[in-house]
Amino acid sequence: RTPCCGSDSPFIMLSWALALRLCLWACAASLGVANLVKTIDNAHRMAIQSISCQPGGTTFVTGSWDTSAKLWDRASGQVKHTLKGHQDWVRATAMSVDGKLVATAADDKVVKIWNTDTAMVVHTLVGHERGVWAVDFSPDGKLLASAGDDRNVMLWDVASGELLRTCKGHVDSVNHLSFSPDGQSLASAGADRHVHIWDPVLCNEKKILYGHQKQVLSVRWSPDGLKLVTASADGSVKLWNPQGKQLLSFGADKNVLPVWFRDARFTADGQQIITISDDKVVRVWDWKGNSRFTLQGHTDWPQQICFQANHILSVSDDRTVRYWQVG
Image (tube, rainbow, N blue to C red; front, side, top):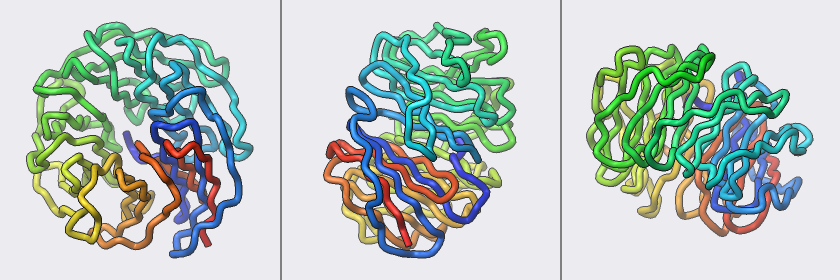
């Protein structure tokens, strides 16, 4: 999905992992040292798989192996609502731009849309044949895209819950989805090593991005919609234009050990990229692929990242919740 960023130059980053903890950093735009300021334990009863932010807001949502999702207030670190209704692991979450709706996707083959004020289910979307691993709202909030282990990308009408169309083209599981900022394109990242860019109205393929050697774990658009960044199990992060041209590749060739990059996304100004990887490090890069600084402290794998305002929230399999101040 589109980066969970505020409009300020500092940013909030949230990363999650196969863990019970959340870690939050406050991060300035300038380089600095991270100082632990707060610890939160037991965010979920089981491993946390996903996190999404309200763009420009103070609410975020997490999804867990414990089959629940939770809505959190970032300022207080308190749970606002616990969303219960799935029968299997919650794999993915998404929040609408206005913060009024949350979507959750699970291994029970179901997608649910929730009202964030009442914590009630608005729609239960049934149509996938296997587990659902990715969801994203269109910027105008009218469409919801979902995808997963059945290789299909499905587009739903948010108001009615009706399945509008199914986009077929991947030959393996779909790991991640991201609408472009203008809503005119939808990118899907697959275990087949490819990224497909779709016309969400016609379900036509606009372009396929070739270049990764192993599965692509995430794809996200730059704020201006002129670039995409992908993270892969091949140990690389790549920048592309929407026409399918690879602009840059970095990772192992930038003094990073060959690891899976789990997630990558642009900051609000589009000038920096945040990544997380299996070496348990959160990295900040410039758009040329030069590492600016790292945030270390995790002792186990993270899964994804999200940021807004001037904080970083991070979760890891190391059973710690860390609230970090970077100065």
